[in-house]
Length: 332
Ligand SMILES: *Cc1c(COP(=O)(O)O)cnc(C)c1O
Image (cartoon, rainbow, N blue to C red; front, side, top):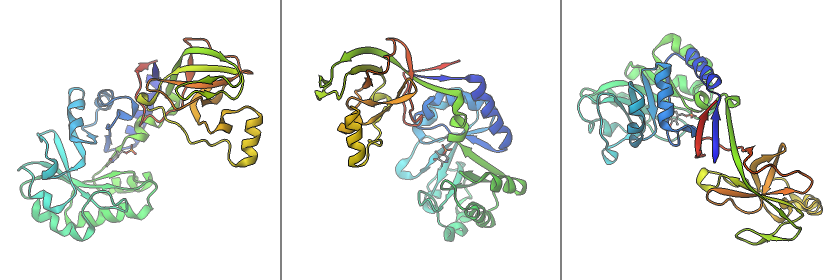
């Protein structure tokens, strides 16, 4: 089992601090729910007492609804080609002026502004046209999705330009905190946050895999689907977690260049034969995959000088929570 253990008290006090520091916080829950799952994040948003949360796609709305009683923003822009059911508690994002006319009467609508991301949004020379198309809608505000560490001016400039076209709240993603604080003193702002809110306190989160089996191997013994010889004597560890869990292969990093490869080969390291470093740590060191991860288990080589872990014990794994699928999430 690949397990995520949450130190609930620590995780929640981090969330509470962010919420306190961020008036207008809009928690974002999308995709794999940052590893926690959408229902759990929706319940946390409910606990935070915020009036609005955001999801990525329309299909995700149904997953948060049972756990969150406020309004839900769909971040991916609406279009007649990508129509979905819209109700009183749904806020739709629109990124083309022509789509505004197509929305059903009374739709709660955010208009997305194009930024240097070049992702979605109307360009600044179209801001003036927006007001003519809002008559049948409930305009909730402008929305501005900035790149990471955008220049200080971009978000502020766009917000001012948009507000001079139609005065309305401005919703941001990835805005510098000082700029946000300054703008918050001036007008109604919202800040969408996912990564910082849910993953900003890594010490509250622990990912571990279970040792499923341990096999002693001799130098040169062939193992695995690909019958590759192990470079040295040691142990093959069968560890829980594989491709289905988002366990990926890091590109070989340790052994660049001939000199390093030669040294690694002399040392009997798997890196010398082009293997990849695994995200599993044993005795404080990341170990090498014997071969690419399998669907739900991985084969990892442990050199003879390290005592193998006990079957059933847990070892730390470094995964990206946004691409991981955990077999279980437990609270500690
Ligand atoms: C995903 C997303 C966010 C949240 O991003 P994080 O980096 O996880 O905080 C904010 N705004 C938009 C439009 C998004 O799609």
